Image 1: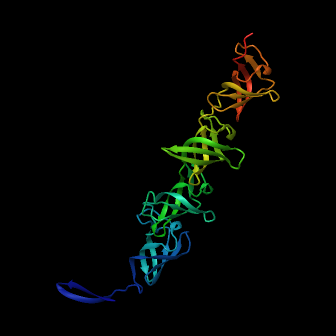
Image 2: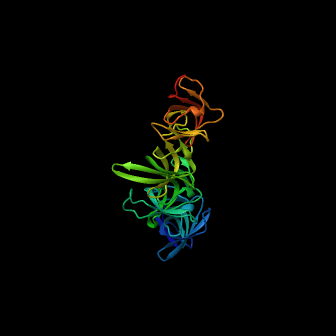
Image 3: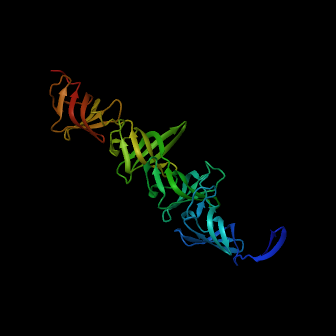
Length: 359
């Protein structure tokens, strides 16, 4: 290319033609929108193939290339997948782009927090589908993907993918691809289900152990199946540890756990408000006596019946503290028992018969 140079010499115009050379291949800063069709990997430097119209561009990505999401949040190649719509800025030479900035228009964090019920789970792919229609009525079902960086929580405690079950309500936060109804999760919070109700059945011999708890809301009653797993902690009214055997029909309980169906849950905590493990004294009347086993049934005015067992160390007295024998006890007598409760049986340390004649 030639350029005309005009200068003034001693007041007289003089003209000269000089040669200016340019590269044979034109270089220019430009922006290209297109679809990601291939990528060499997620380790930098990397090479992407971006299809824009009929042209396939080779995009060079280095550590200096700025990667962002739709609304400008920082991104990385680990978030990119084939099919994403990209906006590439950089120096274009023919069909090669040395990228300075790439905006992934297909992913975003804005609006990417979802509450939903789990509809299905793919344990092999470690993904699941949620129905987010309650908080976001216009959205379709969303597929939630997980990876090695995904963290799962059960309330305020750490969990794992295997804790998820169909029917659970979960909160998911991550990177969202609206066009694919797909969310790559950073965090999954399993919402704990809490219920207050009355125990209507207890099965401590099944695997897992199980309670049936009836709840009431207005006139509506719901019967819940509560599974007791090796993660379940059962406590009495004072938060002392107890076992499944201590929980009885008609006991009032508060349960926190992971919902696994319409009215089923795996309990994390069971609080039995009608068991007082730290109380060592029980009052009632004797309803039956087994002279061979040296036991009797204590009928409590408030609370379930208890079987009272005598050992060689048990002391029996009348109301004045005088020693008596097991044979002195009689059905209908009012007694007070001190001892240790296990399940429904009290191993007695001391039995006071308040109805025996004073001698």
